[in-house]
Length: 177
Image (cartoon, rainbow, N blue to C red; front, side, top):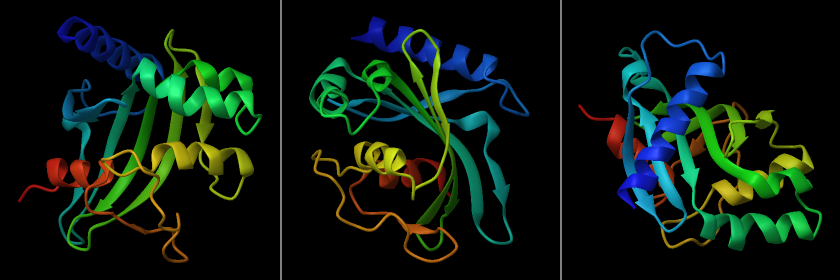
């Protein structure tokens, strides 16, 4: 497991290096959570803080497990709710703005890769049907159940961080005093 985690960590680091994302420093990916779905990381070296408004921008991501792809992604590619190439989904990266004081977040961009680093999808449009299916894969409770909260909680795009979710684990990791 350690070797696989290390290999996946190197993969996501290489992807971030070659993806053209503007970063001030070399990425420093830190694991903040892992479960049967995969390994969840954030880039500790490139967190942008807005101290006045208690906001921060952070790149985070997931290295998805084979079990997750088999149980969650493959059925949706077979039923047509996700494009066939999404069956190879392996790495998810997000640029998020976190409102630490109010326990809210806003997604700016989502980037999806296969295991070889090939870009599958980049952007973010929660109103597009394809994104709705992808978001339903991403927004899950710790126990694996889909979050039943609406994606948008206000007109500006801020969403509440659901306690016990992967987003809550990320908040706890990056919103340290």
